Length: 251
Ligand code: PEP
Image (cartoon, rainbow, N blue to C red; front, side, top):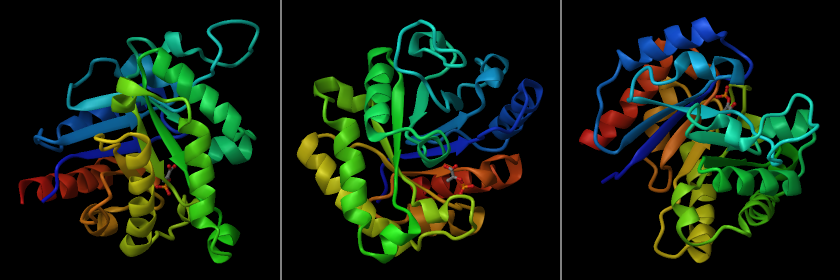
């Protein structure tokens, strides 16, 4: 019943170049290519060159990008600097929003700049625990979605991915239940369909995904993949998650 899955690993500020290379090679050896399955890893900037072109089964993304083309922006990386190094890029990850105070407007500019440079942005969004507890989840994700995607048009939609990541589930060991995730994904699906009729924008779930819950999450109708943090740092756990996707695609 399933069509396509994107299983992505966000390696955050872990892995040197050598460690990233070792992990990509171990991962590539741990799963078979299956039609409809895309595996992406997001190593730190400093490891992108080390994993370049290692194995076509493991696609590469960057964890962040700046929106200016060049200039006096110490510490930042321009979209065109990622050419040949990254196919995807995360924008609006909750750690960028919370720790580095990125606003919805910053996220929108980054997403636009990524698209203009031919990158595939993965727009991350999600609510805090107080927002969930006060029934503000859907209005929060709507605001983030609309702010980031307002300027996207035409064929650009084919390059956009969305990741629903409830902040209370990231790195906490507390996962949204498949039903909680599906409810928000369904809502996002309808909103995205209104923005981009005739496109199925992939909507990934992220937040304490592990081998024990990946199959149930991927079995939900509107979950098109997973964005995995902690469990993507080891080949064994990440490949078990990838293989739950392969299993559903084969069934
Ligand atoms: C993330 O960083 O996007 C994430 C979902 O992390 P974790 O899987 O560790 O909760």
